[in-house]
Length: 349
Ligand code: ATP
Image (cartoon, rainbow, N blue to C red):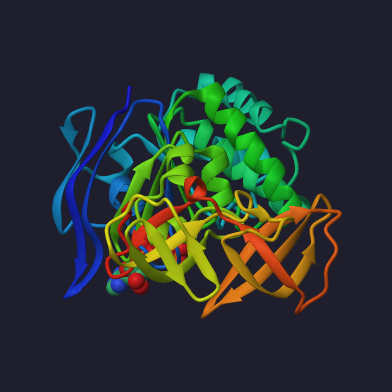
């Protein structure tokens, strides 16, 4: 069992706020992802849970027990970092076994535990190799096995895939997902990669500038972003955001008019996803503008137009044919639209 509670957790260095009033209960066995741009406070939050960073204010509890003053080694959490920090002079077997030795775990159990952990990450054929004789992906798996072997109550993973190339990232990601299912241990995973977050998480915490922006399942965050920041951070390509004016249920700005929206009058930002919009073959779309660029994606063509400062993308059929500067009509019905307050960024509808 490991339910983790963060209550009004703050981290400050002088007047700089690294983490601002973080409140969350992470359920036993949950896979929670902390997601946000560089410097948003993800790593700091995780380091406070690990005990590697003091908590300026607030409390962190594991299974109801406040751990603020507990030594890292007494917290029963295992961390996996982006730099795997393996011991170069030890072979894979000894690297994986190392945490058992330093913790004084009964030596008669070591062999079985090391072999089980190495099997889980498919390294059982590499136990005699030194880190220098492994690929980057294999080294990262040694680091994973070294965390698994401890059988901790909590896993903390800080960008464990970021040093791997794109292809290895995808396969190692799948392996982490499968492992987490098999191990069923509370896991907190830090990343700035929204695809990693969406594919791995039970719940995602989106952070910006030390402040939690939204907590929800990947689907909730994708379908109902709480504000324009979350909307722009989740999804590939990012959600289209157009600043304009709302009056009587009608959104209007240059080249754009969307009727039937449920949002109060005033300055708003209209959002919609490229994959939800389409090319209006009949020319009766809500946006009419010259094409800025066309990108062939293989299964589709991404068509972009410019509305003021914003580049607006729509996913068209792969058979769509047009040239840059041709006028295109884009269908953006009200039911695919999100409306945000332009000043606060908050979701209005
Ligand atoms: P990244 O993805 O780049 O690792 P992050 O979201 O993990 O970013 P943190 O490492 O948690 O960000 O840092 C949050 C903020 O706190 C950053 O602005 C960082 O510069 C600042 N910070 C981190 N450690 C310290 C420190 N020891 N003293 C002062 N400021 C710090």
